[in-house]
Image 1 (tube, rainbow, N blue to C red):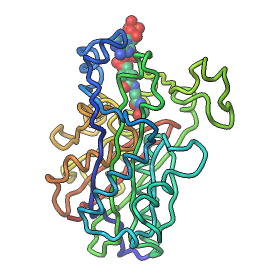
Image 2 (image 1 turned 60 degrees about the vertical axis):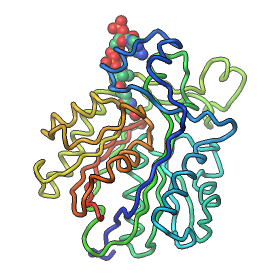
Image 3 (image 1 turned 120 degrees about the vertical axis):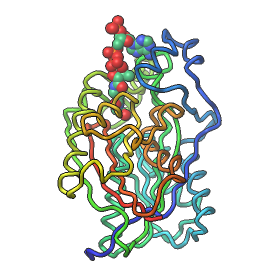
Image 4 (image 1 turned 90 degrees about the vertical axis):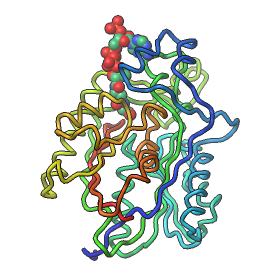
Length: 331
Ligand code: UT7
């Protein structure tokens, strides 16, 4: 490890499908209302990938291609392609990272997927940082992507209003100026299995006629305990990151939170005493896009970020898996 080398984001891009599923559309599908959805979650609309026969890689490839064009990076110079997703193109193999690497021409990279619920993107940033700080690799393409519509039962009002599809991508490079990822705190607790999971399709309950007719390939969520756990654990992660880096809330310029529910983001910020103007919000227009939510937030706020800005990331997701990360913006 070279303590002088940090892993810094040098570019960010996003891709969201054109199709908009609004709250008024959902009012016609299930027993819900725009008023309930907005007050309980802050979501006004979400994007859905409607193109037939494509998986999440479709969005990841679009986002990655845009990023390569924007940054003028030769795909052959990428050392590693990391994909954070819970909705891979293929449940078992190959990894979605293989599919994206091939499509963008990253022929000299090794590729792998990382799955830690909605915290896969945060865990992946720290994973990329370890490879870069070790000196082994210089350039990592990290894609956060999810096609949550592939897991949602659109007759279940408790989950179908929450999720959307999208992709965000960042390019991480070695930085010798001290900018980039400074610290990360990551934790997991298998206690979460009962509260948030997709029952079938894995090795425990492979697909069968019964799993399909029993709707076992859709996500199950017990929202209230997940809500409480999410706030408590993101507060814990944020507080630990601030404390062990000698930071006060006043030092932080931006907070990038996983976008699961506007009330969760606000409750977490309130307990950490972070003012609302430092919070990035994309949930109103994209819903919960799982692992796309953090890079999409960075993409949406990119023009407001300045070199040296101190950014606190907090995330929470299925598993449970949660964490915090502290970054100094590099451009
Ligand atoms: O990214 C992965 C991590 N996931 C999360 O972080 C999600 C965490 N959970 C949540 O965001 C919230 O718990 C939800 C948005 C899922 C639910 O909001 P809530 O304020 O916790 O509502 P609730 O579950 O306590 O439900 C309140 C009422 C219930 O009716 P009763 O029992 O009071 O008569 C629900 O049946 O609202 C009802 N309800 C709905 N009503 C209209 C539940 N879903 C809906 C709906 N429309 N879509």
